[in-house]
Amino acid sequence: MILSGFPRFIRCKASPFSPNLKQPRYKNLQFLSYSTHPHCSISCLSTNPSKPIYSATVSDLKKWEDWAKTLVYSVGSKFMETDNGPEVNTLCREIQWLLQDVVVEEDQRVEGVVKLRTEMDQLYILWNQRIEKRRPFQYIVGCEHWRDLVLCVQDGVLIPRPETEKIVELVEEVVRKDEGLREGLWSDLGTGSGALAIAIGKVLGVGGNVIATDLSPVAASVAEFNVRRYGLQDKVEIRQGSWLEPLEDAKGKLAGLVSNPPYIPSGQISGLQAEGMDDLLHLCEGAASMLKPGGFFAFETNGEIQSKFLVNFMLNHPKSMFQDVRIVADFAGMKRFVTGFCQ
Image 1 (tube, rainbow, N blue to C red):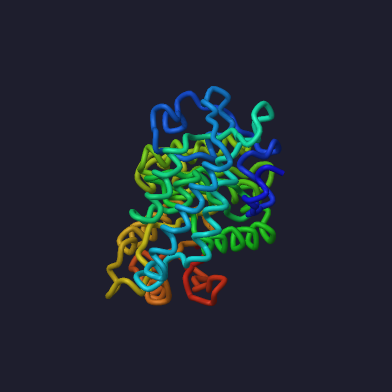
Image 2 (cartoon, rainbow, N blue to C red; image 1 turned 135 degrees about the horizontal axis):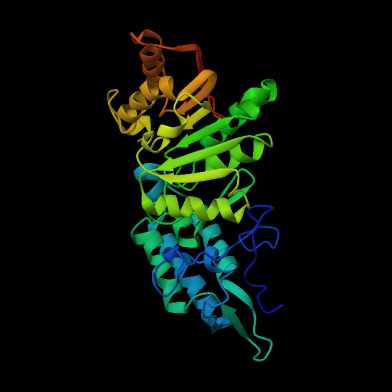
């Protein structure tokens, strides 16, 4: 095979190009237009039939691969030593993943030529951004594999973290025991790519629905695209706005409320007033008025200190309306989530 030098690593059972995934072409989502954003991602543009197909020789690709690896080895362990970033082996795997995403097929008309989703010059720019500017790999390929989902992401939209998958498990646990929660209205605040909203929408019953909010118009558009991609537009609604503000019509009606506000890892901050703490306190105060009696909530924090502070705030607040408040550990054993019910 002509591309035998470029092994294709399978990262997930579902691929951004899988025919089983619904992939509508949104005219109103300008970030999906390659010509509008020359530095935008590759993967989530792959189903756009109007996007130009480029070509290159196998030797051109091999030359790029060698250059990309040289750049990686020149960095060495610097990323790991600076902020526990990706190691050399991981970066080399990313090179192969990027090749997997960019190569469309061999050009049967010309031996030694392959069709690409982007120009070779652009491929050099993208990898330079990855190494020199530390641009996240997910932004380069335009997607993140999260649980059983392949989610489109782009600059300005937070990449869903593996730890956050625990929230979905917590929701699955409570809806399995309570039919009212399973068929009720839920909300995901600060939805980002829509990861939690989509995952929760998939575990709710026929009558269950999710309203997801995000202040960022870019995030709201990306989340809406991901929702439609999975055919959940009748179950998951995206509203643009700050936290609880778009939910006035749902006050006192929510069966569940979840949120994973942006935060800085606890090892990189001092004190309690880390990024996300003020937001969490605001959400706690608002949750009491948004949840119906018996409604469930789950918040993600940056670790044990924030979790304990949040529990203390919720239980000792003069207007506290919460019960069964507890701290739950993530998959690595770190105390990260605060859950409970509204009285």
